[in-house]
Amino acid sequence: MTKLSPNSLGARAWNRLEALRLFTDEPGKITRLYLSPSHRQAVDATVVMMKEAGCDQVHVDALGTVVGRYEGKSAGLPALLIGSHIDTVVDGGAYDGALGVIAGIGVVEALRDAGERLDFAIEVLAFGDEENVRFTSNLTSSRALAGTLDAAGIEAKDENGISIHRALLTFGCDPTEWTSLKRDPSTVLGYVEMHIEQGPVLEAEHLAVGVVTAINGASRWTLTVSGEAGHAGTVPMKLRHDALTAAAEMALAIERLGATDANTVATVGRFNVEPGAVNVIPAKVRFTLDARSPDDAVRAKMVDEIAAACKAIATRRGVQLSIDRFFESKATPMASSFINGLSDAIARHQIASRLLPSGAGHDAMAMAELCPAGMLFVRCKDGISHSPLESMTAEDCDVAISVLLDFVRHFKAAN
Ligand code: HGY
Ligand code: MN
Ligand code: MN
Image 1 (cartoon, rainbow, N blue to C red):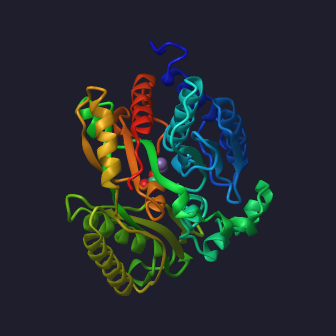
Image 2: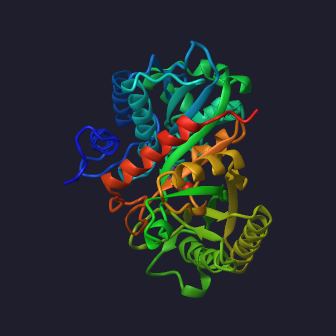
Image 3: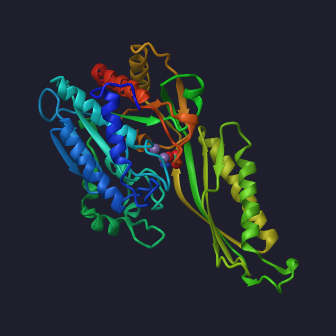
């Protein structure tokens, strides 16, 4: 139980996080995929939270993003955007994404309670497609605002063949309106996202918060290995074209090549075997690659080596290999004005200001194409995320939102 006063920023945020975590499509786990029934419930709850916190206007846009606007000293002023995502991975945590949305709501509520109106508006954004788990296209809701989403993104399908377009109709949105979501840069002053670190650095250095310098670039592929099905009892080992053992050798090559540079990572997260019978030699394996680096040239070299290694294994084993490169994001530096502004706010809280890169991707990657973007990291336990073991403290939540509120109050649009 927290020592915070019930009226504190942290306690109020904690209650909202505890409410959001209940919206899941897998009871007992937190699984809230883009445009799923639980995402719709979370959207509806976020609308209510934003209204109760004092947003002057709240709406759900054509791609399911909840947008809550708190006007400045006069209506229609350019806005500072505060956002993150409310979708999750499968069996994920309660803080990845949701924390940044709840923090934005907390900032609006604190200003409203103090009767404060700033020289700019604030818009709190709850994006819904950051995790790239259900559909192959990613960051669609934030890229639409940045103006970098293309029509193909809306036709991306999930593994049941349902497109984002069709899922939006079921969700209650009008997908044809997505093209109007692009923001005029003159109406936006910047974007700031608060997020758990999803890594061990802040905890190891006993810091509640830190400032992100840059977000690593990522490449995501689906690799399909096609071999020959056969009877597990009759086909001699040397005559087989086993898709699974070929894919397994490729996965080990990916693990080896991902480790060639101190700052690169490469992961095989999904591995589907067909037909998947105990007495059938696997005919087909589809698996995913997620490869990242803070340096785009290093990442390009790594993925080229991965492709070459997988092709060589396929040739030697007499199986077919096809690669679908479905996602690519460049390494994204954060705006120095935001790095400095967030660092100053941290210093005003007598906390040492720690700068660190983000190995995880965020909506800030997309928003940085529209406007100056910054991120405030918050300590999480053991650095664990994308897991039901993901956790943080209400006290750190309180400090972090207080820092974010301080940043907002001191924010001056870079002219
Ligand atoms: O995978 C990522 O980096 C993000 O959590 N979607
Ligand atoms: Mn996230
Ligand atoms: Mn995530």
